[in-house]
Length: 267
Image 1 (cartoon, rainbow, N blue to C red):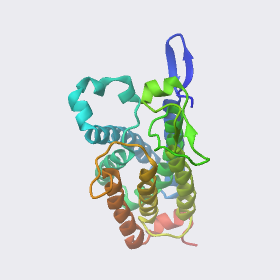
Image 2: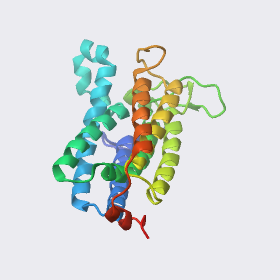
Image 3: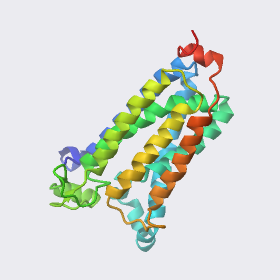
Image 4: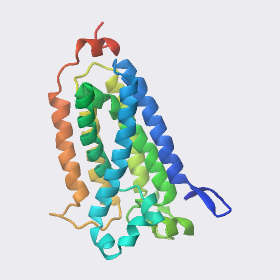
């Protein structure tokens, strides 16, 4: 793949970083558009998006450290290496921390909790979809050995040097599985947002759909997590977030009139 978008004079621009930045810009632009349709304050939503992005990055890294705690305990300097800095971390850790931070921020600013979460859900999906393309370009989050016709084989030594991805071995394109699924989820959520729905249904739909996808993709990813009752910790987290998604999707309350009017739910 192409871990370095630009490489000149000892300086290089990582493809992963560029795509993650692009993902954030797309997500925040889309969220702003949906916030306007829902009658929410653009300034508050933009601030929340930025704060959640920072909290999410911290949470993703934290869960990565917890998953590989033996590695970092034996070699603490690894925490401060460029490869660790470039690593995406564990997305679910970022999602959970971002949601917790968002709940606190929403309560302090008086934003409607479920409506605000619904506004963010489509942006989360499309941002994650683009971000996973960055993972594919860099070689991180690679899949297990695969002998199917659609297997991918990394051959770029720079990718191996930066992420440790094995070279010359056919692998499941786990990053692509997740990216394609997230694009589909985005389409479904975007459509749901613009149709009559209850508060919490859009974010609930995101949690249950993405959790199901992540649970399945874990069977095709290469990782060194210890299994608990035959499942990885990531899969157990997926089951928990899936349950939360089902609850939100099925028990949400009706939109307030002003929000319904803003997005065309009341005619």
